[in-house]
Length: 177
Image 1 (cartoon, rainbow, N blue to C red):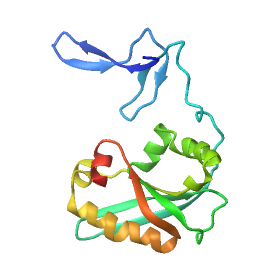
Image 2: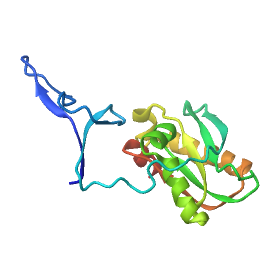
Image 3: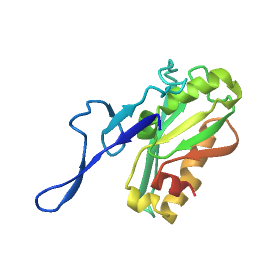
Image 4: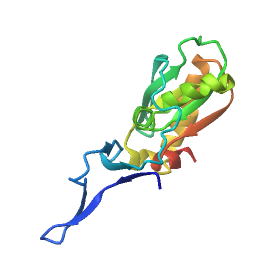
């Protein structure tokens, strides 16, 4: 182990267990469920792409609703700055998009990757988080809205190449299945 993120389990006098940060460790790592304590050992080397410059890109808002399923999908379609709407590119769909992009430093990583492998450049549909339990948990209404409305609307407005790739974590990944 060269890098460790952790929380401490504490049981209070009422026998209630909860997690908290280590008061002796000021180093933290941001996460979806809050900050965790961070230990980076001398052998740890951060990934080469961390801290790289970032193309601010261009964004187009996306808002779609399925009245029957009572589901609203919104987000932003991000593209590299030097890309026109009629330039065909692959599409990457990201559930919990803004949060995923921020916490995983997705755009920094992709900018680093594209500098080395330009053919991997793509548009990124950063879908906003919604009611995860209702929509992401194998919801036919959500799947229908995504597949029959959201993706076709994006594909109609922007030139894409065949094949769509999706990423998500936890229920966001499940919803892609």
